[in-house]
Length: 362
Ligand SMILES: NC(=O)CC[C@H](N)C(=O)O
Image 1 (cartoon, rainbow, N blue to C red):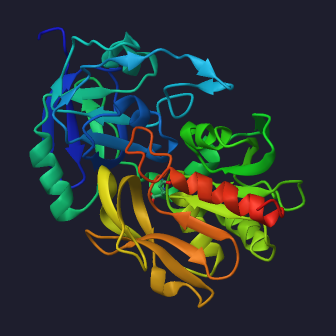
Image 2 (cartoon, rainbow, N blue to C red):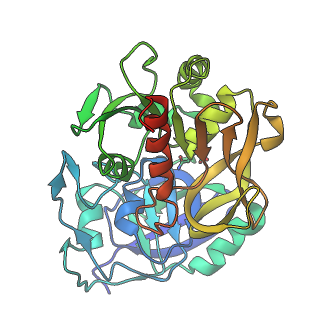
């Protein structure tokens, strides 16, 4: 193992975890968060919602299925959630150098190196996660013997502006015209919409789409504190005066709720997992959902025009809202859920049904 240089994770509270470097050997600082999913590191690492964060995998064995090829379909990568790695660093317990999978092209370490992102293994991720659960998400930095840096709080920056598309991009050639507000959205949102006869116009986070020609509005996920997205919130507020269907996901739920007059706050250590149980309000139906968020909408802060749509069974936090009379709804979890579980993908059908209804087709 002498080929791996020493590298360490330093937490804001002074705790130091010594490990070995298997990615790009450099120092980075950010917010340290953990995800309990057992698979899906190519998807998680390319999820723009992780911008500015150092990701810890609680699942101990990582890298064994390598990293997929960068094949494209419909103008976007088939197996990744954006065009680059967004995590600032990746912290794991046991790195599997050997990998094997039908679509694997490179090792996880090679991919991290290519993207200039540090990886650190040999960490007691159980002990680390216990600290984050007890004390809450905290700032941290990965340091090398050669390079030491200061802590950095990504939530003070407008991360959405950093990751959003800079220009309008069109995908597909379907019947229903959807404007996708790109606050840092995952490509699987595009894939799920394209499967349902849509043409997507993806627009920058601060673009006022209200005078454009479209049938429905998709509000994407994205990084950082939702209150940083003032321009998006203003544009959504205008859209709420109309009747075009709106579907929001994750940051989209927080922005829709804020535009509707609600407030948000930061959770102690967030929801990052493949197995968050949510119940659909007014039914006995529970869904297992994929999640990646640190902030949450305060359901009680919404006006009487709105109602909760889903609630998290673990901690009773908001998991979605809907307007009582207009075709506006959103979820805090990820119905596009790449990588899985796909239990709530039917919500894309619900969105397209609302579009059809609003056009008088149903
Ligand atoms: N995945 C997301 O859209 C995350 C939303 C927001 N950045 C949060 O952490 O709560």
